[in-house]
Every structure is written in C-alpha cells, then in structure tokens.
Amino acid sequence: MTPGTGSGHEQGGPRLVLLRHAKSARPEGVEDPERPLAPRGRSDAAEAGRLLREMDCVPDLVLCSPSRRTRETWDLVAAPLGGAQLPVSYDDRVYEAGPDALIAVLREVPPETGTVLVVGHNPGIEELSATLSGDADLDSLAWMTEKFPTSAFAVFALGTGWAALVPGAARLVSFVVARASTD
Image (cartoon, rainbow, N blue to C red; front, side, top):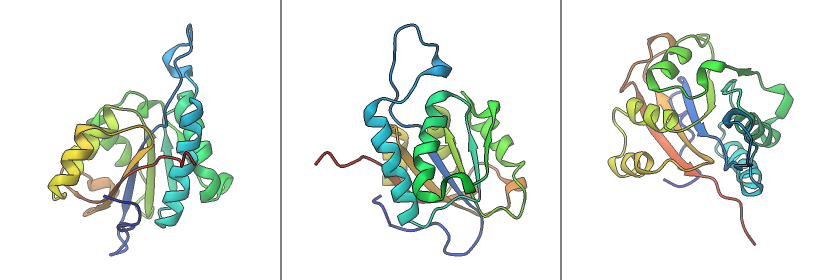
C-alpha cells in the first residue's frame, strides 16, 4: 500500500501503528541493545515521521522498546509529530517481544486512548501484524509478512477496545515503507 491510502481513523475507533525501528549500525563490540542507527536509518526515521503526520497518524501514546536504535528512531519520528508533547513509555517488555507479549502490553492501554504507536523489532512487529490482520488485503498482508523492512509501519483500525484485543481483531489500513529521498 502507498502512503496516504487511509488514516485508519475512518470510524473514529482505536487505531494501532506498528513501526519497525530504522536501519541500525553494527559497530564491533557493541551489544545488541546499544546498537545505534545507521546514517540511512536516521533519514528514513525522519521520513516515517513525516509520512505519519501526512496520514494524520499522530499517536496519543507511544510504546517503545528501550533499545538505543528504537529510542533514536522514535526521537526522529517524533519531531514532525510534535516531539516532546507526545507521551512515550519505554517498556522493557517490547524489546524482543513476540505477538502474544505485545498483545498483553497493548491490552493495558487506557481505554480512552485513540492511536497507539509501537516502536519495536522484528520478528515481533511483523508477527504481530500478521496476527492482528484478520481481514487484510491479501496482497498487502503477503508483502508485509514476507519482508517487514526497517522504517516500515503498518496502520490498523481495531474492531475492539484495547483490553479486548485478540488475534484477528484489526483491519490493515496502510502498510508503508518509509525511505528518505536520495536526491
């Protein structure tokens, strides 16, 4: 799907944005949780923020893995979205979490929260996307689950409240791979 194909907020219900962290560097001797973003990752993360703003996907709450690359991704995504004004929770449970663990975290979201953005890692983000996509466009779902690239995000409209979130309870609205222009 392309940017701007829908905000996921047509009916005004809860909406979930799953964002895989931007491209990271692999410096020798640096442990996985402390890996920084690569230069391309920095520009792609900023582009993801611009696209989310363009799609009117400004989150009411951000759940972010505490790894360095996810924190750096969020900082760059946040700038075009209003930055420091957005509530963010750096949650250890998001780091290396699978779909069941991520659903458990999302079930704790306050019921009045409209849009939640999760900044996490693969394979968890990709697997959660497939788990939630009960009635997804099959071509988009196949593409998304074949390769969920860095700086890509999926936008879902939820058919339930946060506390009742279960597999198949969301509709995929958009899948976007954010890449900064190389002009």
